[in-house]
Length: 328
Ligand SMILES: Nc1ncnc2c1ncn2[C@@H]1O[C@H](COP(=O)(O)OP(=O)(O)OP(=O)(O)O)[C@@H](O)[C@H]1O
Image 1 (cartoon, rainbow, N blue to C red):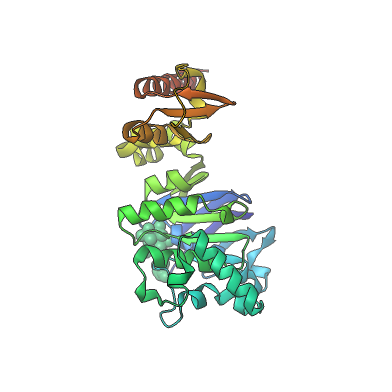
Image 2: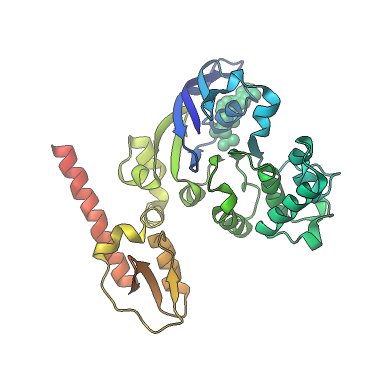
């Protein structure tokens, strides 16, 4: 668990970099710090890891104020992933990944096993890359080594600063997908900085949207889209609104509006229970076979028209509710 209470920070020029920032991230949750350039995201992350000291306010990690914890053991309980991956060029992949376990004096066999397990999970073949040097790897592979290094000693907290920022869009999407499906992060408290809206929607359980050092709104992607706290939040998502809405709305949410088509023959594709409308649209427009969704033990066959209609009906319900809330 991570908690920030009214945290402030100004640098030498006196202009506030972070103003009165408060939020809480629960264990097992991923909070994305999203915002324009210079909005204070990195400064906030660095204060959590004590790389920067706040001028005022309180920061707690796992229930304890960070400034009273012993710095070495405090940092070992936090995995930190940097945008440029920060790998040591003269260390092999295995040596890079094993840095913290070695500092913790794990025995050699345990370290080796852990490195191999993580490499497999992150799709880096140990046979090929265990003894390779970072410069022999592609950008996406280096990024995965950086992630493996941060996860090596299984820290309860993971902080990531634009972890996929330096990658091309295709590699970025694939590394992101691997991250999303990684069982290693399911029990961690994760904070990730990005200025990529799509990434924030894909990876964040909740998003903290910042501007000029201040939090504009913290909430689920759907809350920020459908119930924006102010004009800044509304405007921020305007350009990509339809795409984001399709991403934010789960099939489970619009289930009652989906047409009840019976299932087709076996050998078809079935979307996972937590699939979004966007994932369904992608499948429907690319899969050569009928696309299904399994809900409450029942298989429903999807079609593009029915899906868009259900999505629109759901949105109308939200608009009506919003209007009636505003009117009451
Ligand atoms: N070490 C520093 N010295 C002086 N000013 C700084 C320092 N670090 C950050 N700032 C300033 O603090 C503000 C917030 O910077 P920060 O890096 O936290 O923003 P950010 O949201 O992470 O931006 P980006 O997305 O561009 O990385 C900016 O105005 C920046 O110029």
